[in-house]
Image (cartoon, rainbow, N blue to C red; front, side, top):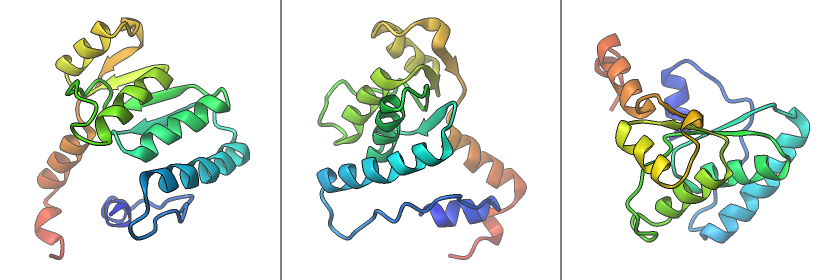
Length: 150
C-alpha cells in the first residue's frame, strides 16, 4: 500500500525494511520492526523521529527512538476509544505511543482534549488536522483521482 501512495505523490523511500510476511503474528512483526528500525536509527542518528497513525510500526518506531533517547513526535495523536481491544491493536498502540512521545500532533480539538485529560503538557500538543483527509482533499482538488488506474 505504501508503494502506491508514495508513487502518487512522486516520492521515494530511503529504506524498505522488508519485514512483511504472510500471516505473521503481531509479536513477530514487532520483533522484526525493532531489529530493522534499530539499524536505521544507528545509521541515520536522527535528531527527531516522527511516527504517524496507530499501527504497530508507529508504536515500535516510537519505542526504538525512545531506546536511542531520540525525541518522538506523534502525528494523529490523541485518538481514543478507551477500550484497549477496540480497535485491536490500534487503541493500545495509540496509548503506548503517547507515553513515548515528546510532541503530539492531534488531528482535532477532541483528540487534543483527550491528551490534556491524560495529563499531557498542553505546550506539547499541536492541532494539525488529519493528514490522510488532507491528502485526499489535495488529491481531489488536484484532479489526480480521475487519472488513477483502478
